[in-house]
Length: 201
Picture 1 (tube, rainbow, N blue to C red):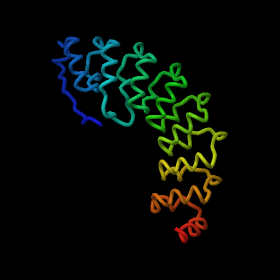
Picture 2 (picture 1 turned 30 degrees about the horizontal axis):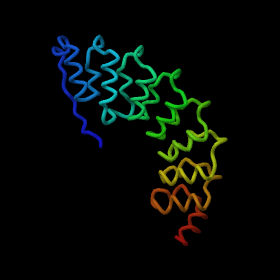
Picture 3 (picture 1 turned 90 degrees about the horizontal axis):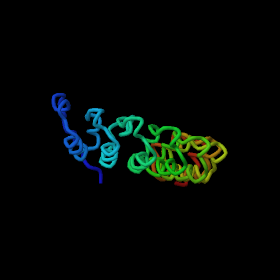
Picture 4 (picture 1 turned 90 degrees about the vertical axis):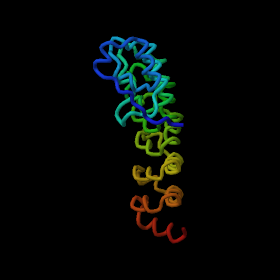
């Protein structure tokens, strides 16, 4: 269940005299309040607490890791964040992006595959990402792209048809997309195939 986003306004005058206990209370109310906590109070425990209390994502381009002091970001903290917000992989330091963290990220947010280092993008990680969101297909290395993966992509998100190379636009793949969202996908299917499939639809 996604909690409603509730910001606790912290005025400048309050932050000047804020104690660690005040900061912890604000973080427990909503992890996003970390951004309003004075940096000298942001220790590891407070940042970990914030990571465990972040619902939902603040914006498309931010994760809670943006407000954690760089020297405090470690693998354990990243694991907590990625378990809730796979998109945060883009904010995980490159040296911490190992296979386990990347797999965790794509399980939660398939499009995080774009931020997975190339040497880690194996069959399992790519299939997991596409199973979560078919629009991750363009980030799959060319050598791992198959018609079966293309089918999986349109099964999880019919709009993935837009990003499929023409060689994967088989009757089976196109028919799957048409059955779920005919109006949205018709422009991505070759005209002759569309007419053939539509007449038998």
